[in-house]
Image 1: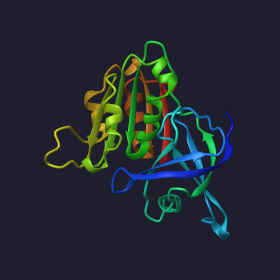
Image 2: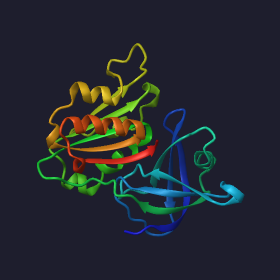
Image 3: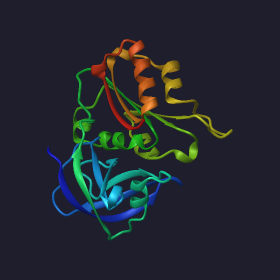
Amino acid sequence: MSAQDYICTVKSVRYLTPTVFELSFEVTKPFDFKGGQFISVVIPKAGPQGRDLRRAYSIASHAEKRPIELCVKRVEHGPGTAYMSELHPGENFSIYAPYGDFIYKPKHNKRVCFVATGTGVAPFRSMVFSKSFIEQPPISTFCLFGIRDESEIIYKEDFQNKSDIKWIPALSRPSSTWTGFKGRVTDYLRAFGSSWLETEYYLCGNGAMIQEVKEILKNNGVTKESMHQEIYYK
């Protein structure tokens, strides 16, 4: 499945939190992808000497669903999010897609643990609705989602409404009324991690979190073959 260029038409823009929005779009020709893959959006004339830039965004919707959905966090002074946040329904933009090998790989007699921070949960939403995940599910699925506070929780219903997925938000700066886990995803793994060697780990989010989680897993005997990652930023 090699990457191709596509012209996309915006269908809707929906804010999930004050800083994260979901952009849905249609494409002008058939577009096949696998849950967990990403696209490269062309940012016109945003580079040196007016050259185009490209920015990568994970697909948040599953492969059989249309329109396609992206989950985008607004980054201050970021040319990609500045451009994407100004798009309106009916407007066009260009992409190259699909990219990436961060996809669900069914393993016999194995559990799956998704670990995400922020918009890193997007590819996992795409994965759990994928045909391969539904037809060849793991023994059990655990989704650990790290954010600062309650206002940053996204896609809660998509995970909570699936009875075969245990969804745990880990809040590092929760309000006084929060009754769930308080701390980072790494704190949770250190405190409650188990069945290390029977689990495939999928990690997506900031690079520092991913490196720390990998160290925890390595120290508990997990091999690198059982760690799959997508780093959003260093």
